Length: 527
Image 1 (cartoon, rainbow, N blue to C red):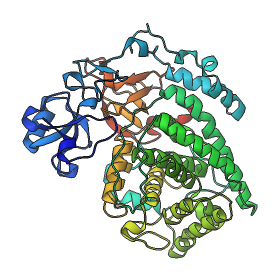
Image 2 (cartoon, helix red, strand yellow):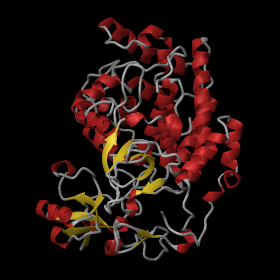
Image 3 (cartoon, helix red, strand yellow):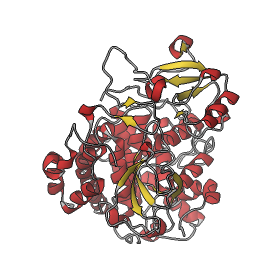
Image 4 (tube, rainbow, N blue to C red):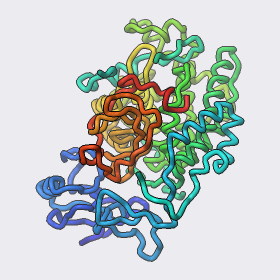
């Protein structure tokens, strides 16, 4: 076998051990990192996957002459450490694909995720109480300790798939509620490659394993989310009083969020998606900020660029506070004149931010261009292609996706799958092909915080991604097979292929829109 490094056919990612393997030599357990052709010319949804069955193996052999295999992400007999001279800290792979054997020193007592969420909620929403939780996780959540001898694991609303292609354009053209008069909503070293070019310069994804457990990072990140909400409310009040907002404290919170994303991106994404208030604008701003930072990290951007993306995500629509509340809250279609007024919020945002000390030119450029589109259909200047720039395109893409997947006063929320279909429909149109492809890979088919239905009939929420087998995330089961709420939801890691009542391994059968089967976030999460 030849190493990919010797051929020049593909770039290495940090920590990978790639080989070029002839199709005839492929076997179950190998992680396919790259094909001998573009992924879009193949029937595979995920760009990078483990060969799990004979059908996939036969499909690869019939399609390709060779593929790039990453031994460090393979499982079973196909796995090999990236550096044989150093002890490997990852899970030891066994011959059984359905389970990993964890070294004794790294085993944890199973974490009661619902108990953790309930403890955080009972601690109160005040910054002081939650700050103490972040500083003293042992006192608040003693089940997070390492225990070497512990045992192992134990009719829908929304947008339909046929509506997806035109949904992105409609969602991005609608106003976001930013006025305080809006109505309440109803029931760790990595690559530092900075990319400052246009949207057409695609960056390869960075496969980075979390360095901190999800449960521990949620305890740390929750005070940041609460502080961000409070600061956004203060900024809105300052703008409405014609005062220059103090952005220095917000910059500090965003800097801490950048570090949180580096430790475990699922924690901030969980909190951003599921912590809800009665102010859509604050929730949406935090949601966009979390997504742009996670996407920027995935693309390998440095901490400074990721921080600029996070700040822009929080503030890019602050100018809507200067628009008439009646326009922002209008449920029907906007007239051409109303569209013209609505688009002026970009100029208002720039006026507000340019008067605030310490706002970088990079942040201002993102705010200026985040409504521009690669085909020239955006505003305010109708820029095309590389004129938009990668940073602004990241912000615009995440803004569009987050708007579709969150319930708004004038529209239902779409499921993650429908939203991703709508984003893919903009591939090569509103957004560059490479950026869309990388975003889909970053978010995955079942993003953190999305509702899914299992083959057992139960309904669950995705708690954390599995970075190797993306179709098998960790979930928390909210509703039983009869769709009645579980009084004490438990978590289930689909990676371990635990059997259902019928003996079949648990699997996801479909994604659900927010609010499906009457699931109310306030009953299960941190609100």
